[in-house]
Amino acid sequence: MILRRWSVTLLAALVALLTIAPLLWMVSVSLMARGEAAQFPPPLWPASPTLENYRELFGNFGVGRFLFNSILVSTLATALALLFTIPAGYAFAKLRFKGRDAIFRMLIAALVVPGQIGMLPLFLELKAMGLVNSYAGALVPWLAGIFGIFLVRQYCLSIPDEMLEAARIDGATETQILRRIVLPILTPIIVTLALYVFLSSWNDFMWPLIILADQQLYTLPVALAANSRQNVQDYEIMMAGAVVTTLPVLILFLALQRYYLSGLLTGSVKG
Amino acid sequence: MTAAGRAGEARAGWAMSSPALAAILLFFVLPALASLALSFTDFDIYALADIGNLRFVGFENYERLTQNPLFWKAMTNTLIFVAVGTPFIVAMSLFAAMLVNSRWLKWRPIWRVALFAPYVTTLVATAVVWRYLLHTRYGLLNYLLSFFGVPPVDWLGSPTASLPAILIFVGWKTFGYNMIIFLAALQTVPRELDETARIDGAGWFARLRHVTLPAIAPTLLLVSVLTVAGMFQLFAEPYVMTQGGPAQSTVTILYFMYEEGFKWWNLGSGAAVAFLLFLCILAVTLVQLTLAKRSGAI
Image (tube, rainbow over the protein chains, first blue to last red):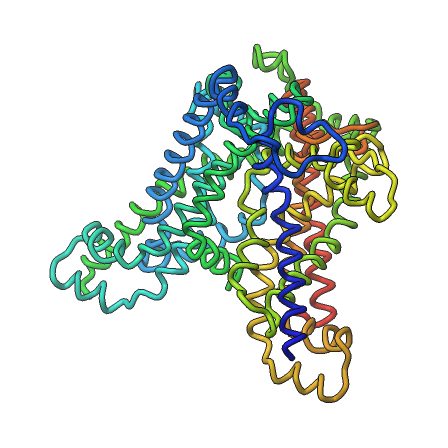
């Protein structure tokens, strides 16, 4: 039994090491001197770790600008998504209005339609609205978050009706009920949803690539992809760019992983 | 409850849901429907400059696509990704989930987070990392393989190796997500069932086939439907790692649609591609559901 326990754990450790090895290597190479990575056999560890690549990245390549764009777009996307989806999710769970269930069933059916289907007309629509090549254009898809509505609704279903009725009898308006009673109960799912939207909008690539033409507006993934098509040889710089792009979300996930994983399960077990 | 109270509740319901519904209508439903309409027009760079140049062309875009070898290449590549990638990724995810679910495992949360981590990383960033990992001369993968006597593979430079190379990357990037879903399902399988089968002398594979898999069949279906949809939507991977090459061996449908729409500005033709992609996803998902129903999984 003891042998078995250790062999399973050893296997898991090996698989886990293989899985995160690319990420560790990314960090390691980003600390190497220029040209050090282009060797055989590939060095696993920098001979003398240096932050030179990061200095170059923020100096010559102006990565600070892209980092700012990414933080701005993801933060606004998260705020807007919460503002739009939380009241809607609550309404679909707890407020009785005509057509509610029919509309909700249609929303669930629409979940299977990938967003890319409408990308070309959406581009034309935003062009007509003058939103192409602007932060606002990059934010638009995050307003239409069906998944978020679904997540909030599932969570709201567990709120007892008596609680809301009691507040109504005490003379509270519907807005007050949402603000003072429902929102505090929803805190865990709000953290989950915020984290989910922030990570997804940070990592999003295709839509910002289409809608942001001006380099000044590029988010980190778009800027990294554009540079990776040109500076193929500069491995150390590219790895430093990858670290700057992905480390913020990785750290955010590690700090709040409990919320992220529980949300993932609520979302995937569709009733 | 009073009638006035009911009306107030309904009013509040509409007030709270309509901003989100309006956004969904305007930025999701309308574009998706417009995609179908757009696919019957010759919307191109001239129409973009002056809408007066727009003509209704019926099925011409679809006809032209069927005569375009690159479209068929993109279609074939994507179907290979779906047909090979789905079982590969589902099996990989299930293996990881069973490993993490093992009752003999110590420090479970650490391994779970480590295996899930690639999923939350930025796709473009890790694609750049993997392009380097897969480098013929300086890449870590070929270096590892050299210990087993495998000669260097030109992963991203050969038309036969490029698709498997991207598939390995996609598998690495996504298996953690499926693993979490599988883990939740595996935790509902009673340990006693597995234990009884073991005492009866059933081997590891027999227990997997007759105990575990039937118990998690609905989850297996869910994960394969999600994976198929994901395989149909590969875009950033070829865009960053191979730019569709070499010899167009990694052009996917979405990559083709992007080039058609935003490189050549053939938006009518691009919309036709988008609509065909939707039909493909729908068709494969329906086949999966039918198969699952017939085998009694749901």
